[in-house]
Length: 457
Image 1 (cartoon, rainbow, N blue to C red):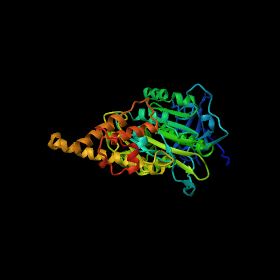
Image 2: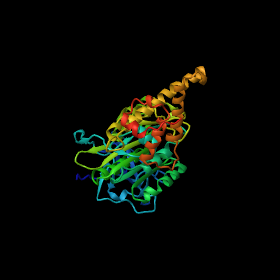
Image 3: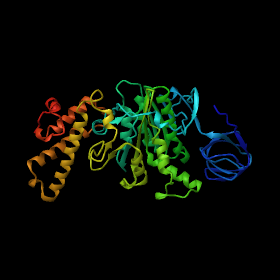
Image 4: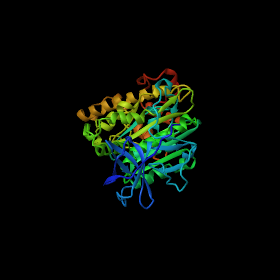
């Protein structure tokens, strides 16, 4: 392991809000970890935001209240922030920097690694395969998560995307393989944080959860670190300890807004909507830390959750996220029942690799395609009914409208604390398509229809 020599500086030139400007800081780099010692002996922590010649701008996590320029010593570690890694993270609730909130001792590990992570050699990647079942019917059937995949949840403001994220984290599993969840809550209110802790209490007690809570009132730079700490913990659990890990990052819009604030503090030239020009590469550096590694049994599956400002899917955060991830689950107000998923706008590009014979059910892809086709036809019938009146619709159009209604009532609608087994999800799906005449189900093979179809009127 490389040895870094910490460098002490006592020439604090200026205090600027939560920032300290240190003069004579030669050889210091961006994102370098810093320790600030006050006259009283108190120690605080910081991160280098900007370097200009011999000046270093350090953001102090705990704030600069009580700090005087005279007598303050700043020590630069010579490397980015590092954290200990190991199984000790499981079952723990910590703040956004990994400090315990559950009354337990600090998390220790056999080794410590930088939170920035290391790029994974593409030639060592294995394609995602095998499903991660969430217990949410609309996801498991139509946009199945696959181990090693990155798939996002896009939500219109005001919809319960955080509740859905917590429900997925509480219920997800792989059907027997060693499984863990790392939940990074970014920029939450105290009320939302309490809701997440309550929802995930059982999983935490089982030692299968690492929960990092960054609150809205916490330092902005901590919000930038929280997802990186979560992914660093997950990588060790997966690629060293051999566990399948689901990483939930919510809300990534808060993360991007924090990144914009840090960029402004650095004096960088803004790009689209004042976000930094490197927003795409920064998000990619997080999302691309998912995957499977050849020769190792574990996997990291990443589920970023983000709210779309003003419901605009072309906003830079969802727009760039959509380019990087392998699908999206879209929440909309047009779906009147929880979890408010719009199946026709949602997509899992890796779904085919994780479902079918030996994984879920042989007819999974065909049944999902048939339901989506029926919902598309029902949407067309509903638009026609708005123009000419429902009385002008054909009997077949009315059957499609009935199938869409059955989908909303029987398959989509689900309680926030309800975890549906895969068998129940498929049973409900067959009841939905059985509203239609058998001759309309052209995407399903005859043997699947013989086994599952039971016409309903």
